Image 1 (spheres, rainbow, N blue to C red):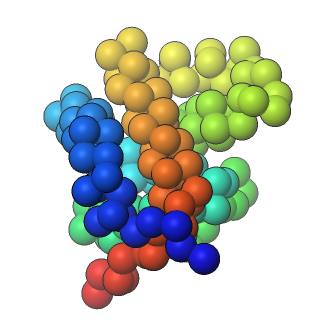
Image 2 (cartoon, helix red, strand yellow):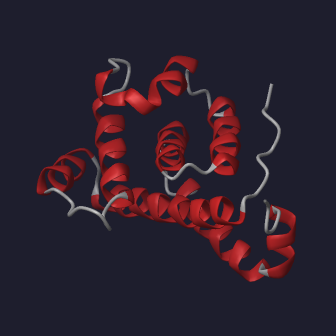
Length: 151
């Protein structure tokens, strides 16, 4: 049962929505590749089982040109050869941060992401992961209805 829809949440907590959207815009303006950040947001949304965010970011990923094979195999990225080293490091980092309440972050995950991302890129990648985790808890927690799939 839905507690609030996105529009209801926006009306009730507009300043929160504005702050999260500003965080997302900062990531978008950072220079990080949009296909990469969308893959990260999708993977985190898979882990957190947020249907609203999954559909929303699938739509954005398709618009950003992420190949269907990557979208289809994202949940099994470790075994799928089409992900490059930056994507693999970013996805591992996303999983580590998303699961940090249940297990410590491995030094190897920190080391790998630091090897492939500049300090500025790492800061914005980490912000993107934090932001989507917040949205997942809002959208998933309140049961937002997913948006329509983009054609």
